[in-house]
Amino acid sequence: MPELPEVETTRRGIAPHVEGRQITEVIVRQARLRVPVPVDMVERLVGARIGALSRRAKYLLVPLVDSESGDSVGTLLWHLGMSGSLRLARLGELPKKHDHIDLVLDDGGILRYHDPRRFGFVDWLAEDSTADPRLARLGPEPLSDAFDGGRLFDLSRRRRLAVKPFLMDNAVVVGVGNIYAAEALFLAGIDPRRAAGRISRKRFDRLAAAVREVLAAAITQGGTTLRDFVGGTGEPGYFKQRLNVYGRDGEPCRRCGAELRLVTLGQRASVFCGQCQT
DNA sequence: CCCGATTCCTGTAGGC
DNA sequence: TGCCTACAGGAATCGG
Image (cartoon, rainbow, N blue to C red; front, side):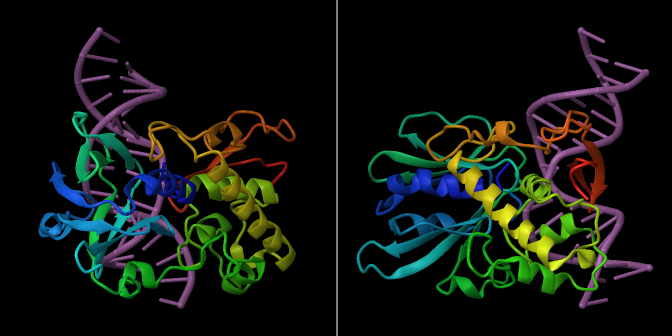
């Protein structure tokens, strides 16, 4: 499911094919997504040109400029939810079930949004996208210098929340969902149930490094495909075979052989090794 | 402020 | 075999 590495994989996959292209037609087959598709999105997009794609947290940002003047006309804020994917199709390629939105481009390409569970959305941001509250409240990018063990330590003092939901809080650090939180905690040797406020600075340094390591490795592998995630050019991600704990409860720990345990933290399944993670 | 619970959605897995 | 239920989960929101 799309966490940061999957969104980044999508961005890299589609960017070369959509940047600089003009949108000639927009087809919305299902407007009832997590956030309803803005009613005026079609008229705003048709004729506009796509600028340089970027990513913030798990959001894909698609800037649009006026084809004539080059002036910014706004930005699409796209979230893939848990089952969404954006991929390239060719003109004439028939939509399948759950292909909710097509952006038809002037070279015959189609940017096609597919989302069976409709937890994703696309919304319209006017000129100054940083003012949007969904972006303004976000913590630092995990692969930036602003994220480190010191930040985790400072924000966690006197907090009794378990470290796993703490790490998944977007105000702490963005882009870390259930899969990569579990994997990073395994790599750092930290029990996901441990209260965030009772973890040392040294162990948070290890955790921050583990978050960076697992996200960078997942991006290299094209993300994690559990069921149906595909990158921008339609290929699955290959990080699943590198997973140490996520989805492996009852199976042996790859490090020590102990049976991996399953607990619920913050209403999320959390798998860990009771031997390796303390 | 902190944190747990609830909500949205649908395909799939598991139980009986 | 087929029906039913539980579960998957990001993030906004609510309530204690």
